[in-house]
Length: 183
Image (cartoon, rainbow, N blue to C red):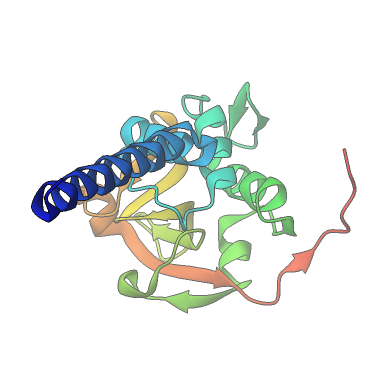
């Protein structure tokens, strides 16, 4: 056999092996449950969920989407904004926060919009000077909250109402971690 022919066969074999390895990597990526969850939440929730995202946070929010708003409520039959934020911090971050949006703000280091990270809190003031609403920031200007008109949902900070009433973001200072108890 001539050397050119042998060399060509070797190149074809290496190419074939490389393509197979690439396909296997793609298959593994598609079968990875966290990757599938990220893709699902990105599509369903309209939020860019990536490898660094807290999937537990998105799963928790997804389970609550559509829960009706009820002032003072804290169950899936009805919940208000501060109870929803408290539930997220309790179940996702294993952290106790207070029950009132103004009190919760007092537990935070204030942040501007451009300093917000996934899991930070966002605070709003309606007609008055006091904080009247809280949500949990997800990234890409989106946040999860219990809206008084639509219940638990994901909204965008750039929507006119939220842009107009946004007060500050906040990151919990020295969180009060709960003792870990297996349920």
